[in-house]
View (cartoon, rainbow, N blue to C red):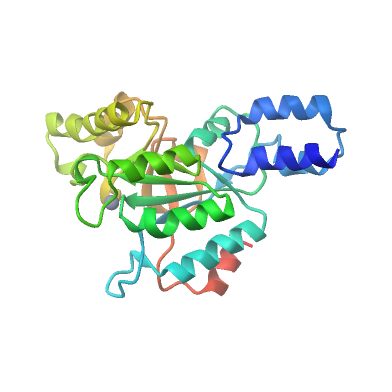
Length: 263
Ligand SMILES: [Zn+2]
C-alpha cells in the first residue's frame, strides 16, 4: 500500500513523469481505499483562484527589479515545496478549464523572455525539487547572447519539468502592431516554436503585459488555450482564459512577505 501511495504522489507532483490526472485518479479509485492520504492531495471541487507567479531572470543584477537573486529564488521554491504546493504547467491547467480534477494547493511558476539563467540556475533547482514551470520564450531571440538556445530548450522540455510558452517573435508592443504584424508576432511565433519542438504551443504571454481587444482576438485565432498578462493578482476563471492575472515576484520582496503570501 505504501508503495502505491508513493507512486501516486510522484505521478501527481513530480516532473519527470508526465502525469495525466484524470487517469491517475481512475487508477487510484481502483487501487486505494477512499480515505487514503493521496485522495486528500487532489480536490474534486475546483480551486477558484490559482496563483501564477511571474519571474523573468534569476541572477545578480541589482539595477533591475526583474532580477531575483538565485539564493532567494532557491529559498522561495524550497518553501513552496515544503508548504505542500503542487506546481502545474498550462497543459495541466486544461483540467482547471474543463472542470476536472486538479492538485490541492496548485501554483504555476512562469518566466518571461527566455533568459539563459533559466537554464543554468532555474532548471537545476526545479529538477532537484521536482517542480514544474513554464518559460515564455521570444522565438526570434532564441540563441541570442544571454538567451536560451534550442538545445537547452529541448533538454528542459524533455525533463518534463519545463513547459515552453510563446512570448511573440520580437517582444514588441502588440497594441501598436498593424494587423499583419500582429498575426506574424503571435501566430508566427507559435508556428516557429511548434515546428522546432514538434508539438502544439498552448500558452502565451503578452510582451510587457500590453494587450487590447484586437490583440486578445489574435491570440484566440492563433489557437492558444491560455494567455497571461502582468495584471496583478491570482488567476480566476472570470478574468477569461486569455487574460489571466499573475503575481509578480520582485527582488525587493522579503522571504517573510513571500511566506505570508503563500503560507
Ligand atoms: Zn517579456
